[in-house]
Amino acid sequence: MFPFSFEWVWDMGHLVFHGGLWYALTILGIGMTYCIIKSIVDTVKADGSDSHH
Amino acid sequence: MDSALFPKGVQRCSMGKFFLGLSIAGAVLLWGVLGLFLCWIKGLNQTNMNDYYGFAIWIWADLAVIALGGGAFFTGLLRYIFGIDELKNIINFAVLIGFICYSSALLILAIDVGQPLRSWFIFWHANVHSMLTEVAFCLSCYFAVLTIEYIPLILENRQLDKVPFIHNLTHNMHHIMAVFAATGAFLSFFHQGSLGGVPGVLFGRPFAFREHILVWPYSFFLFTWSAAAYGPCFTLFITWITEKISGKQLVKDNVVQLLAKISGWMIITYIIAKIADTVYWAMVTAPSKGFALMDFYSNNALYGIWILFAEIVLCGVVPGLILISPKLRANPTTRLIAIILGVIGVSLNRWVLVLQVMAVPVMSFDTWALYYPSWQEVATTVLPVAYGVMMIMISYRYLPIFPQEVELNPIEPLPTETVTEIEVDKETAEEAMVSEGEPAPAQA
Image (cartoon, rainbow over all chains, first blue to last red; front, top):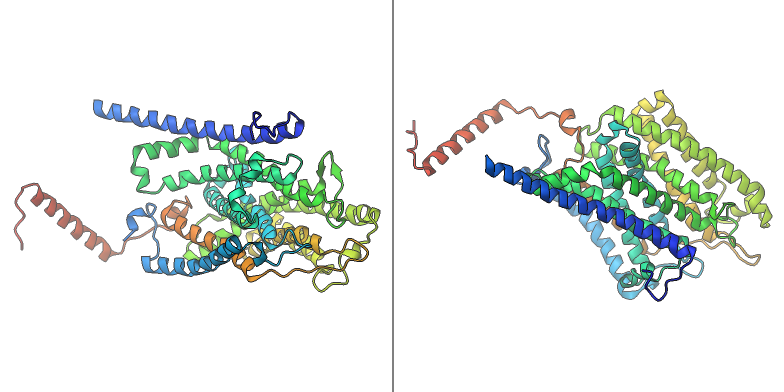
């Protein structure tokens, strides 16, 4: 549920539960995005250095 | 046939033997799938649940596998956050077991909800006053963490690892695994706790109700503690089974002993807290609701005082004392006994707090309501076991689950094999020369 959903209420229950959920999902999402982007960069860099040699 | 997919430097059984094993587990799995589809197509009338038992054997299995899978989060916490380096040799297997346990728990829930297509309702139309909402949130997120922890293991397959991007992805995921492990520990603390909080807040059922610290009943903390304490026992138990079936030592003894020692101290501290909680409940909480201790353990065919003794003394104090004693821990037989007792102990604790809670009469006109599962419930509860066996078989065969396996089981080629390999190499070289246009050497 998002704050713009019609069921949303700005109370402690919604903030704690959904805040925790989105916090955890954000960490996982950012972590995986970082890994994938860094892997692409590492792979491209390695390919580039291979072609120089 | 599939040896190119094996981890480097290890031996595996023949393809026929492997498929035979898979088929046996697969037959059990199919029996479970039949029960599953009956429940989905015909509905929950396929179960023996009734007005007394809204929660039944599925929820017990759910809570038990989640506790047993606790070895993954606790070993991950010790390895990545507390930096206990020796545990790197068993963490892969702990993650695999955790992945199996949590995917099984979600599968069981998918049957239990009756309408799996509406499972997303719990996220979108969340009841923020329910501990089960917290369980659903944390369980789903933690399963995502376990998947993220399991992915690098799959990508480390010998053939996949040859692809540069996959190799880099595995390396980068390992590099920040501490972040995922910390998130997993945070999520596990809350969902294990909330599962314990569910019986603890049932003020209408004095057998389950416990006093609170703020909004959290004592059972909240006991559940998290017990999962961290007994989860490693399950990891060690499945490691022992895998070693026996494969006929190899897969983890060094010092690693097993270290995890057993940590588990032992966790069990001892947990069981002291559990005894204190039980004494307070028996002497203060239950009498304040009009019940004596023996009201919960008499006048029925199944639940005697033996179950309390078995859970706390036989499967709690005894394994704890064995595992903290260096001499008894070093002995493989007593260690195994302690590990098995630990696994039974935590499963018994979950049984009591799911099923005995429902059985105990509450009103003065009530009688004990015992429960026997239908075959469909049994089949769907056995299903995850078969699924777990198949997952372990496939993962062990193709993935480097045990980093010490090569060192502990060096392959010494037989003299005949070496000669054959040389001959094969020679033939391959000759074929290559011919294909490149060079003349083949003269045949003798």
